[in-house]
Length: 176
Image (cartoon, rainbow, N blue to C red; front, side, top):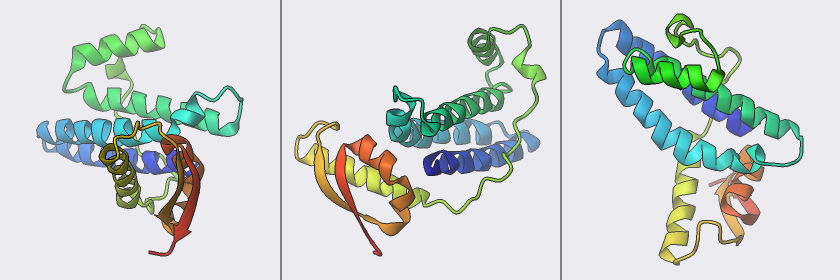
């Protein structure tokens, strides 16, 4: 799904930036990059965007794609964080995966082949921020329905996830 490709593209960038920091032995770079990715993109936007698919009771391909992507990102975050927080990442890894294999023996994550970088990250984040602000300004719940919104055409591939995320009935796409 487009949202899954988007966050995996961002994960690839994170892996490259973290590797560059580790190669310089500057642990602040991966720590800062991991925090920004995990909180500002993954948790705030991706999780909210795919929650509808991930919790869908239907066994649809979109649900499986969301679960695959969630697993891929969680494992990559643990691997990237392991040199900085070795004991907690070890505990989480062994508990989640019910394994005796150390996370430190798994190796550094590699960027995923076949994931394009041409995703409208800034546009997607701004669209979400604008809708959240609108709902807050009008004292509406984040789950409050919205009948129609306008969005730039580059967000069209994300339409179904955005509709579920923001409880939107219709999105009208524009060129601006």
